[in-house]
Length: 115
Image (cartoon, rainbow, N blue to C red):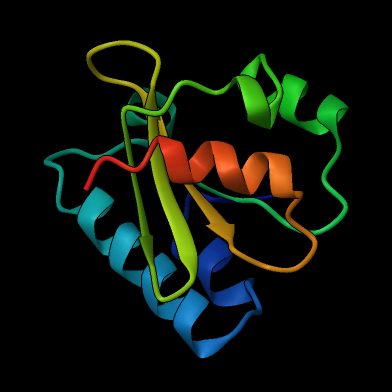
């Protein structure tokens, strides 16, 4: 699981061209918020192979299966989700629709697509 809060985080992240383009677009959108501060407004989280239920509990307070999505789309075989914790703070969650994603999670995400 990777957190993207700063340009340095973004520059250090390695992934496919499609994944990098989506992360860049989401990063740009967040930074268009006046006086954007990751601690106040939230940031991008990228789900990766090997992330465990314990990792999700630490980051989100719940497992991936338990996350409530306030918005979820599938584009270029990559899930982009938004989970809000209040009227101001939330996470943009990027999940590659890769072979390592369990069928149970994939089916749950498909049921929750909002667009």
